[in-house]
Length: 95
Image (cartoon, rainbow, N blue to C red; front, side, top):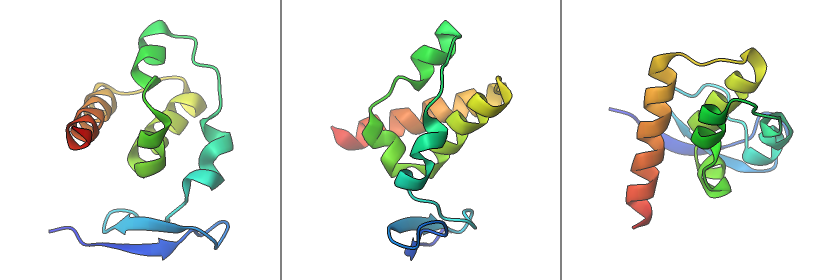
């Protein structure tokens, strides 16, 4: 069972971030915005990451996957699978 609560961002100490039991270091979207900016050259990955900005604002998981791709240049099959699943879940919540 996962608990969630709000805690201040560890970088800026201004914004509140929704924290779950698996997230030890809550960082807000504003602090990670610069890390998310980068050029994605692979067409398949460009399509994968072309989701609404609101999704990145809401989900630290989606932000971390994109940052890891920009940093290391590749993702595992599981990372891609769970990224797609998280995006599908968020789209389902919007409807």
